[in-house]
Amino acid sequence: MGNLEKYPYSGWEPNTHIELQNIDNVTFTIGGSAALRNNFSGAAYGIKSLNSSLNIENNLFTNMVRDDDQYYRSNDGTAILASTTTGNTINIFGDNEFGDSPQAITFYGNIESEIKGNSFSNLLRGININNNSSNVTINETNTFTSVSTAVIGRNITGNFQVYGNTFENTVPVTISSMPYNSFNSTAVTLQNPNIASTGLIRVSGNTIDNYRIGIHARNIQYITIGSDLFTANYGTPNTINFGQTEFTANHRGIWLENCPDAHVQQNNISKTNPSIPFGTFTVEGIFHTLSPRGLINWNVLDQIQIPIHIRDDCSATELHCNNINNDPDPGLGVFLTSAVLPDQGSAATPWNNRWFGYDNTTFLGVNTDAPGNQFTWFYQTPGVEFNPYPDPFAALSQSTSSTGITCAVETAPDDPDRDVRYGDIVEDSLSFVDYVDEFTYKSKQYLFEQINADTNLLVRNTSKDTLFSEFYSNFKLSNIGLFLRVDSLILAGNFDTAFTLNSSILYTNQIETNQKAINGILVTKVLRDSVLNESDSTTLQEIAIQDPILGGKAVFMARAILLRKFMMYYQLLELVLNPNSTYS
Image (tube, rainbow, N blue to C red; front, side, top):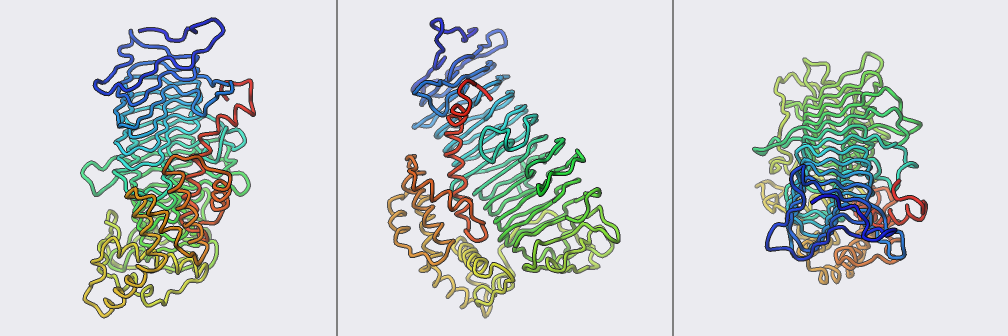
């Protein structure tokens, strides 16, 4: 072993240093001890692997370059590029170093991998995992320094865990200084084009400093961010700190979009720099949007401008025992944007969220952007720090003398109070102040999906059993039921049948119009790895810019598909803009 940086011919750069194909009977080892460290440099690819299994240990990858001739490809400048059609194992561990290059690691296909103990610095992208149904762990003190987008997971259906890593960003955080799209300066982003059946998805025990976005997820169900108090190996909190000297863009610690059943627990999110965000930009701790049945529990949010932001339909989402303190900038604790939430707690068991930073005239509480859909906020009488002083348009506060406190609870536990939770839906007597049509539609969609997943909800031996059965039977034949059937066919891989059924649906509102369009693109292009045409791109862009309250979950699906496209071509765009540069 030794250096692999010498050009084969004077004046020529190699395309690939090591290329492997179909090494599937044994595990091939590249690198080893410090004395045998390889130095990969000055090529478009350090290691390129097709249908091969290997271990990569103790190597140095620097100054990967883009091949700027007419055969330029979007992955040029990648240290390790691997793809498979057969399923393979690739482990990358033991002090590999990646630096001063466009990309470090990119995987396509069903590759099982453990990536641990490596360092990444001065990169546009760190680890990029695509279309993976195997187990991937990114763990045990990988360090990321000045990596614009550090960990990317897309089209995930297997186990995917990111834990015990350190992310330190010193790249400027302004949009204009970043090389591509709105996910610049992001530590971890996990995105599926639609809600799919997945394995264990967990992001825990990471330290994230000075990134614009700490942890982001889109269309990922059952994700755990932080600890999971209901499993034996429940992980540890993430620590996210905003210490930047300027905030000229929106910053978010944990950002969930269309992520049902998410657990966000025991995370520590703080803003240690007193700089005030520029203009209308904000720093948000937890942004939870269109994510029902969530659990936001035992998080510590310190000096954050908007500690918790709830948006759109977050039915059955519960907030327990969060500790909020932003004394220098009082006024917000939980901010609601057209949010749908259940009552928080009960007279017997208040869900005591602690609030600090208010006095008799300025308070930390529950606020809303406009008159919305009220719920009751229960708090414990003996502790004034539990009283959120809610905006009267947002929540009705109710004190209780009970000393019972419930922090770690299961969400939606079989709904013994089914009639209370859903009676207005089956009786068609829902009442909303704003977005009446949209929230009514989404509420019916939500209940139908709940019953379809667990038909035991139909029987509670009450007078409303008949109403619930009629509701379920009627909606099976409605567009709501048909779209859920399309989802099931897609998950089963029956793309042709899904396309036929989807094409037959006559949409009745904007939510359905968007969903039909996205389904068509999914089953004809995205899930078949076909190239999007101009019409597809236009449709996706028109949906992606819509307000999700009006456009439904298809808005998030369009954004995820577009991100995949943009990230495939961002390097080419950068090359066109900066033809003389090899890295920016």
